[in-house]
Image (cartoon, rainbow, N blue to C red; front, side, top):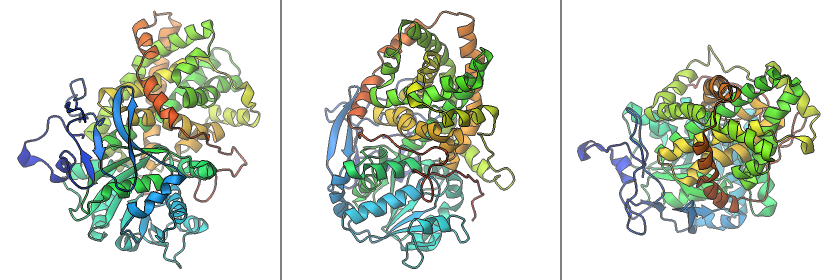
Length: 573
């Protein structure tokens, strides 16, 4: 379980939150002891003042009648998971028993993918459960939903509150800022005994800040794909011929009113295409997710790319070559190698001279990157980052999000991609050292805060290499960042400059001045247990690599898929 540290006295504890702490006969079973009888260890390190501390979720347990749970060891830590695949869709009739209609509310990054995947999986399972899209009247997304086969005529496209009131599983995928504004009306409109499904724990943070709780007569569950929506759909499509390929999902049962919330959540995860699903809590998910997208997933990779490009041009490289040695190196060889073989394989591919450069870049970059990562995590945990997102969303009518790929560097990138020879993409050792250091900084903060390896590997490594970086490789930084949620897009814009600045001002200066590398930090990298944890994840990785078309291609692009035009609008009430 996850909790504040320390727990409040019993008289002040929230019953819904405490439900996840006690063992429950129905739904999820969150044990305070491992199977061996050992107590769950509290994460090492004293929590910073005002920041929430997370207790290890390694021993999260859950009940399921429809699927088979499996005990997997990640770097010596035991965790339960459920494997997915097309052959597991036979469990959906039992998992979705009693559900007559699923409503997917919104049409942002996740909604088109999840709605289409659910519709396809339900049909494959032979079920007659309609999936309906709920949108506000006059929404510009209405026509796009129609283009993917949802229709008001057959009851699969309607106004938000009509769909909410008519659905047994309400999957809320409107923007986080809109959720913060509309959740009282949405909760009031739900049927007693229905299930609220979230793909982000953000709403819990908002409601805790507001001092309110979920209705007691509904289930509250979470399924959070560890990748942006277009990749969830694209890999699902690609995987139909190989028993499934997709994006791993975390799932949580925050409130189990009907006694089968666990199966509903797992069924949802399997239906959207998760190769494997692992348990978490709403609190742990929103901390790791909001944090990760500001770090290596989006913000940090954007910031370091610009810092590296400037560095290489200052050193005399031609702009196109500087782009190849920075961005192309990250999204090409580095990402592909980490995805299939892990971070150590990147280092081991280098010759002796390259290894020395990698070590210098890694050692110089780790601590500066971790400085920013720690600040981000504590801003998320304290609620500051959530408030920032809500406030920014309320300003979109005056200050919509601007373009992030119009500068000289990214225009050079368009020219580089047009001439790309995949076999000639370099593995730059300096770029690799900076990238791996920033990835390890992202990992280390999550580990220090008590997150389990399933969450760490997916939020810091797999999502970067298998879901996000391929989109930057295809069409540049905006195609990656702006196909994500509003929350992710805002966070990337806010924190990318911080990573750019600190790497340029501290890490690169240290290397240029010839200061001695931190040998202990690098030795720890070579022997870090996260490599073993990632290897375990890789064993469950489908054989399919995501395929996304570049400029001029419609592969993975279009209605219900990746967008090439982006907007930001204020949530209506």
